[in-house]
Length: 307
Image (cartoon, rainbow, N blue to C red; front, side, top):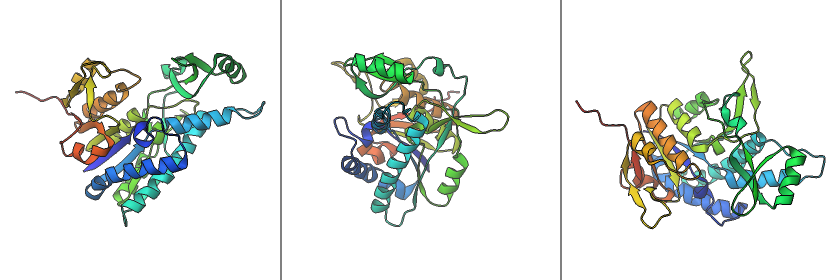
């Protein structure tokens, strides 16, 4: 079976942890232990989040002396793919002795006319006091938005429409390699209509939606979205959360999960199942093997056909 595994940001770096190398190595050991059993039985592609890492790089880039210009987010995203990919591959090689593993910097196609570019809403980077935020907005032309404890930069998050390196990823899989790719949703690019030339855009792409596109293009059998909770809950954060253990795409959409938490994961799972007829699941990192074998997590399956 071919499985695309999407590691959430909290699976790679737990809340409260600093994004330093020693902590990330420890957390990546948890990742490789969790997926090792699956890798011995199936073809595996691993994608990952990058929010803490790209936030740190964005802060460091913006702190440069005037008139230095911060590096655009597409290049920062490429940096995080290299950083996390290298750590993941080394950890995987140590855990899966004799198993080939490769990390690939991956580009994600988006549309230049995506309406998200007119409505930046995705938060990146650190929290700033109001005066600092205003100065950065003037200096760099950033959009900023207030949250509970300060101001943060907001950027566009266009919809992924394709993965540039799908054919290369397929070739690596058929050679027997475990592939790490599409980190942070992939480097967002547009393609020139006339020449096909790729142009980076200062945006971020949702990692779960990119994983769904990648899984579809690879004809994967299973999309596994791993996070820090055991399954999807309705009423999460209330006094009476209810676990959702089995759902169809329609069930998930009717539940209307929040866009800043479980919403992208449920939408990614729903899209993959609708478009391919395959299976998707959402659950905890440490239960990855049990989720694929139906013993944990939230299973997302096609609607049953009666008649």
